Image 1 (cartoon, rainbow, N blue to C red):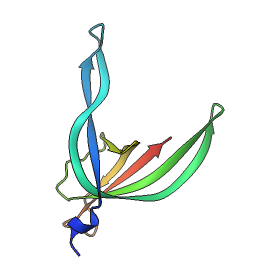
Image 2 (image 1 turned 180 degrees about the horizontal axis):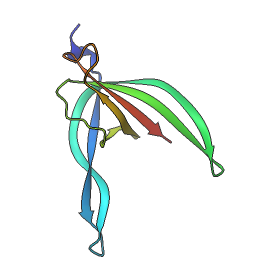
Image 3 (image 1 turned 135 degrees about the vertical axis):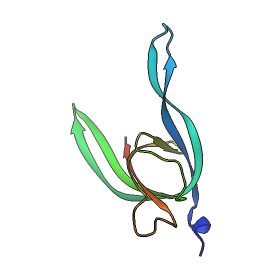
Image 4 (image 1 turned 60 degrees about the vertical axis):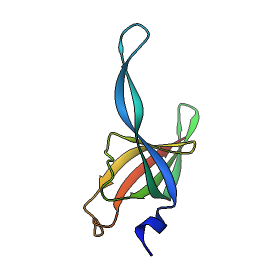
Length: 107
């Protein structure tokens, strides 16, 4: 079995960017960076209450090509799901085969 056969989904990576707002001010936003093939696996989830609002946090791991350009500042999009990149781990046991990216989804 090859790595390509295990990468069964496509995700979009967005990187922080600054744009000019309506009044000329600098506005922080995210801009398209790359489209990657990957494997997304749910690890766990927890629900917390903040200011009378239930918030669901879900941890995921994304496996991508070891040469993929993903950093801790990026955001990953999969369908309607948006994830914050919590860690990029290129130094695990199979670093020549895949890169492991820890993600957090907040709903």
